[in-house]
Length: 216
Image (tube, rainbow, N blue to C red; front, top):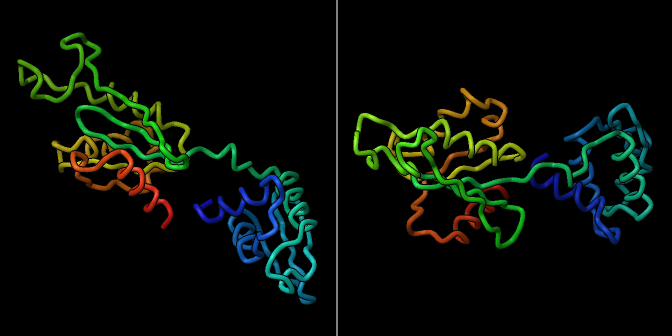
């Protein structure tokens, strides 16, 4: 589901029951998750997961009635359609070589989960970048850093990544290149990688920018 159809899904199961659920949005939801057929008499036949329901002449009304909303709920439940509350969150990952911050974009004032890069071999307490090593032939353990980040992203439905710099100076670019080799399914959920000036943006501004992108 995209952001709009997910919102419609949430409205279907809203309590108290909604009275302004538009049929055009309901139809878009059905077309996303099942099969929709216009019958010659103006009725709408919807098939989800082998379950079919005929809605009587929905084109006569712009907004679904309470009975129709209950009928839609029953169809979604009986067809085994995944509840929106079980759908993973849409996350924002803000990453550099010093730390990664992971925000939920579906909640206001989100407090990020923070991941600090570390050196499991014990050369240093924390590894911030290759320049932190006295022996510059040694490199930070990106695998360990990126694995912890991936673990924190595993439940996401979609992932948006913000970072700065380019090439090897960009932790974002390194992570985006690393992810398909180690976690392909997680990589498939990345909807974009955007260069931002992290030093001049507050967490609230970063989150607002991410929400704007997700809403497009």
